[in-house]
Length: 300
Image 1 (cartoon, one colour):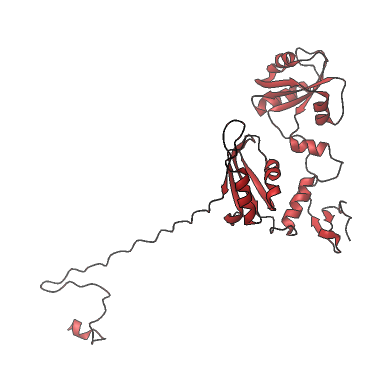
Image 2 (image 1 turned 180 degrees about the vertical axis):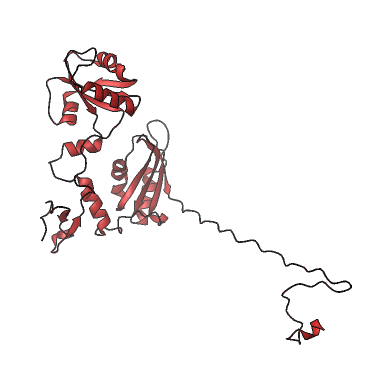
């Protein structure tokens, strides 16, 4: 047998997860991500986290110092709680978040400030890195397991053990699918699940918010239930609901995809052969006259 539940298998192995209900059996082996451990470093972005600032640092000082590296669009000194979320521990010096106009400017700031020399306007060096996203915060605050919970979830979704099939969305079954419009820009799959899961079982990977390139929601999402009555329940609860800005939420059954229109090849008209002088027009491939299967009479 492999490792126990939650234990890592051997090199190149995965997690051995017990079967549902605690029954006997080898369980589902969740494969590790390609290449070993998932990276825990923050993803490059236009937002940087700064550690080691003096206690008198404020937003004015931040903009003055870090504008030397690019266009500072946002900046603020972090609270102790925010500092712990970024580092996992409290610090006796101030920390801050600074957002630049581009990822390139943020990378320039990181490279310059981590050289060991304090930036102009400060008397001591600071430590700068890309700010954590929600995903990297979860990995930083985890219990040190080799793989994140995302790997476990995806493994079960693709295992076929979960109701709803092999981890696929119910895109082909529009009777169980919802179309939602009018959502705020900070909507995520997590929010969709919190809103719609009380109304019925949702298929694996059954919630999806459509995102812009910057990660904000386009205002549109899809939810795929496992039962059609859940769709009708969701429509009755949410469709037309008034939002704080005065707009209304639109929730309706997903329209079926239009069938592709297949163009038929054009039918060419029969070619008419000009008649010989004094004769009748001839059409090729015409059936012989009745009573003369050989066509001898027409030829004569």
